[in-house]
Amino acid sequence: MLQEINSMKLQTQILIEKQSNNQIDYNSNVLLLGSCFSENIGEKLNYFKFQNSQNPFGILFHSKAIETLFTSAIDKKEYSEDDVFFQNEQWHCFDAHSRLSNTSKEDLLADLNLAIKSINKQISKSTHIIITLGTAWVYNHIETNKIVANCHKVPQKQFKKELMPVDAVFESLKNLLELIKSVNTDVSIIFTVSPVRHIKDGFVENTQSKAHLISAIHKLLSSQMQFINLSYFPSYEIMMDELRDYRFYNEDMLHPNSMAIHYIWEKFQEVWISKEASKTMRDVDTIQKGLQHKPFNPNSEAHTKFLQSLESKKEFLQREFPFIEF
Image (spheres, rainbow, N blue to C red):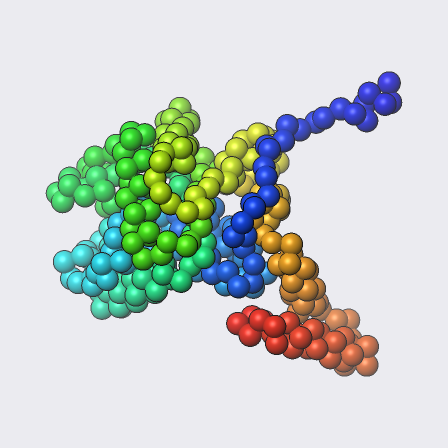
């Protein structure tokens, strides 16, 4: 009986395989775009001091918003007064998240154009682009007949809410891949679907939305499109299946908590992070924890030696990777 209990499986596992080529290491340059889950992964990359850039236009929930951003960046669009509007005592842009909104119109335009220049350079030099899609629901601004990235609390009557069909999501993703391909043919593209549930759309509607995203991505993966290193990482599936318990959610019962994020990050590391980089990550982690250490006696000889040792480790690491800063 004991033997039977020990052999019981209390969790179903998503089958994942180690990426065989172009893994992420400390020479890689990673661009992360999309839903807030891309920023969760980005925070892990930041902690371990990988070279990366995250959501220059803020969180973007759907493929059309990301497609618009790539189009603007590659065309070197310059945002002007015609692209912004005043609402609730701030200036906003329908192409960007409210994180960029500003009480100053001039500052908003400066930030938008600086971000466009930054992402234009980043697309060309990226070795990996991680795109996390959150929803297939979009809001079409009736006056301009344009799908927006963010409504900025503009009255809902000014928008038409629409669910993008699978084919529309597919075409949007295909378009943004063609845009990337026009300036960078060597980059690896990693698609993932955010495990965050958008229940404001409704429970059934959220499931339908995620299904459209997953179907469109896999249609793209199975198409004959000539694109190097196109792949899918199952963060949504890991959350829904391996972590199917509310103890893995924040108090809102919608967002993965730190434990879930760390678990999915470890799965991502298992697939995408090179063995050599994992060794460096351990060194970085040691230094990060050392920097967070609060001594009982900061003036003791033991603490002085500890700081000297920590500084030596930092210097050794920075000789190999000069871009790393603590």
